[in-house]
Amino acid sequence: MDVKGVLGRIGFDGEWITITKTPIGPKPAPIRIRAADVTATRMKPGSRLFHGYVQFVLPDNRPVAVKPSGSFGGGRPPYGDPYSLSIPRRSNEAAAKLVAAVEQARGA
Image 1 (tube, helix red, strand yellow):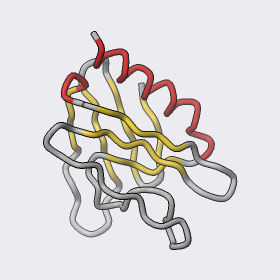
Image 2 (cartoon, one colour):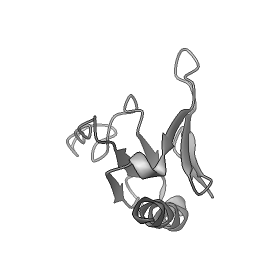
Image 3 (cartoon, helix red, strand yellow):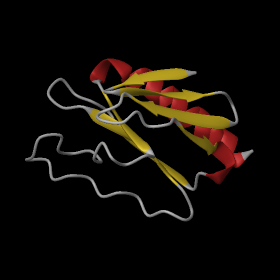
Image 4 (cartoon, helix red, strand yellow):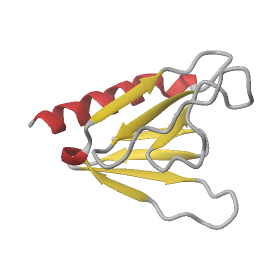
C-alpha cells in the first residue's frame, strides 16, 4: 500500500510504515515505524485549496503541533516532522485506506 504525498510518500506493508521524504538539502533517510508501536494516527484530508496530512504518534513522542492555518503550509505539521507527511486532495482516498490498515494492524 503506497500513498503519494507532497514532497514524499508513505508505504505500508502490513507491519512496517515507511515515510520517504523528497530531500530539501541533505538527503534524509527513510523513516521506518512498526505499526504496533504507533499509539495514534491523525489525518486531515486535503481540499481544493489546502493540502492535508497524515501523522503517526509514537509513545515516546508528542505530536508536532500543526502550523497556524494563516501561514504558508498552515493547517498541517512542518516538513521537519519525521512522522508526518502532507498529502494532496487526490491522495485522500489512498491515505484513508492506509490509516485504516495501520489502525487494524495496531489492534491485532
